[in-house]
Length: 249
Image (tube, rainbow, N blue to C red):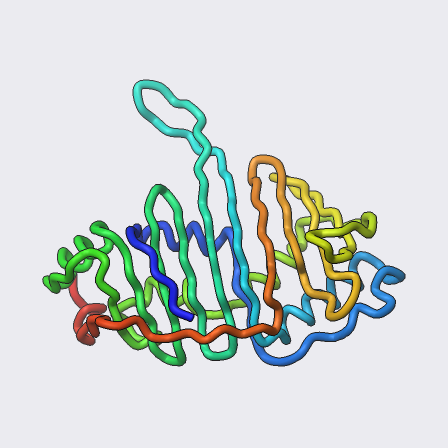
């Protein structure tokens, strides 16, 4: 399934990737049978294994961060970032909204497509002399230099494993609860910047369902459609970037 969005800011990518994560996708998850009797560490390990071996997942995340803005005087503001990801074995569709701009990327096999707003294309022209109208899909090899700054944004990574296993967090088992009609085991987390919880499916594969964070870092991340892939299609009218783009300016 092909989805579209307008606007962009390339520099928002790095911030968005740290918000949330994507998963290395490969096979089928294990069962949650007897999960409630296990320790918090064992439940987390089972969930990491299920996520690592999943064939597909849809991830949405909304995060809030406190920033200092320097004008006539410093003041605190709330910055909002949103991330929407669809992953399956064939590739990744991703949309990031951050700093008031939107970036969309699709990776299918070894090809990456990126679409943004005026800033993305101004920077492209300034660095390379290539003029492309804002909102146009750009196309390049995912492992090439042309769109190398975006490649990590649109490919599965191990960052989900980091989110599910941050060594700086203390982890305790909470109650069994219900998340959108699905029974889930709560794993409470406590860190330097935030507290929160990871909710793991209590029946079927022990898939992550929801991650919440509260504090200086506040976020809500949901996982749906585990092992239910959707069809990714290449966007029409994409402009293929020449190989020299990555070596200019």
